[in-house]
Image (cartoon, rainbow, N blue to C red; front, top):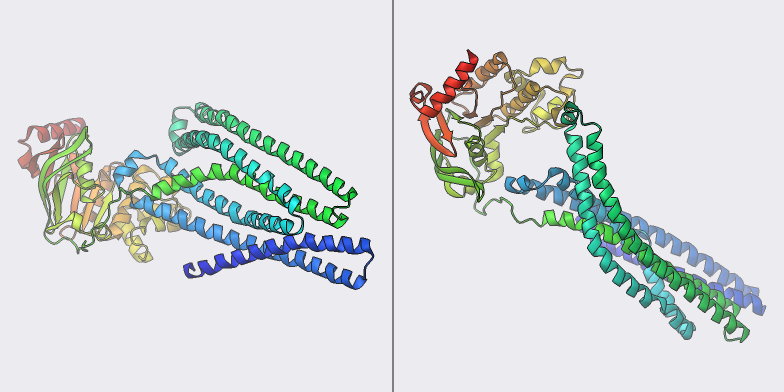
Length: 566
């Protein structure tokens, strides 16, 4: 389809030019008809002119209609491609970028940016503007050839219109940037409240949340009124100019008829051309009104696409097979910002086919270490190797096929159970999907839902309990048959019996899958081959459970949990 785009565009231009020529020629033919009838000349010439007049209008209108339809096609195709480009680039951006940007605002920028591109293109092409401008060009040419003085009169409003539009639009452009910021703030408040509806209801804020949003939207509208006043001023001045010039031209035309400088047919021609002159100028004004509003929105989409901070594969990046030897962290340090360091000088080996548990108090760096293994971030110092290969030298897609992460805060898509489980392996058959669900202790509750595996989970899995969401997430990960499975508090919402059953199922994968378990409940990781104790971003101890009871930090964590259990 891309190869045909130049031909489509050329076809559009030819139709637009054809429409402009024919629609401009029609009043000229009508002028000759009027003068012919008044002069009482032969009817043979009259019928020929009338046929020519009808053909010009008919074919010109068809060309105009065709140009409009093609422009609609062009606008939708370009919109779709820029939307895709924006969303595709958004997913390529690193977690560090996502951490700094509101997801609701980014979604709005992509959505409205795409719509703005369509508006801009369709306003420029589809709403007859190009045809109108070409028509204006031919009107001026025809008029100068027939009645030069009137051609000058028709040209007068053009520079005046442009000057007024330019100066007022500059002021509006500055205000429009602030207006767009206020709009994004209001939309962010709306999305934030809607996406947290359960919290709103839990705290009885059903009345306050709409007020919170309304205040921001009211501020947007208050500022918008000031911008609209400028548009009104511009339109008012242009209307005054139009009325004044129309009246002056008509007055002179009447005088010219009485003094026999022009014929009645030429008067009709001048009035027709005058209308054809002011129509595109009025459209130009309307275009600037919408262009200013949408150009900024489109620019926000282009800003996302222009972000350079992307984790990309190096040209010589390699693919990897399932882990055979070990993952090793060599003097790894990482900080989210210059003021908040997360990991310091980490040295750790994780042998293939073993279970490694990461424990420590909240904020110790357990999840951050997992993020580095997934290459959501790159270390600031040191390196991580996978069977001896630096993670930065491995193709990200290849790495993600080997490493699967199950987070504590499980997020599901608003799709069916089957689609959610098969997300990482969309080609999996029903038997494989059900087997993964059974391993995750999810099969039975899925069958109890109204449509079984075809039941929709709701937005972010809202129709399921926390434990059910976690079991779907575990099934989703197991279906990919990962080489490395990272479980980040992924059974925290499960009862002990279900958690034990899942643990036993995963144990069946032992020696096939390397497990990295992040846990606060130490009872779940007593079987681990090695337990890594982290404290304030540092590894303070590594060993088995009995060995670590001599470590004060681990012993304290263990005693606190088992005292609570007693």
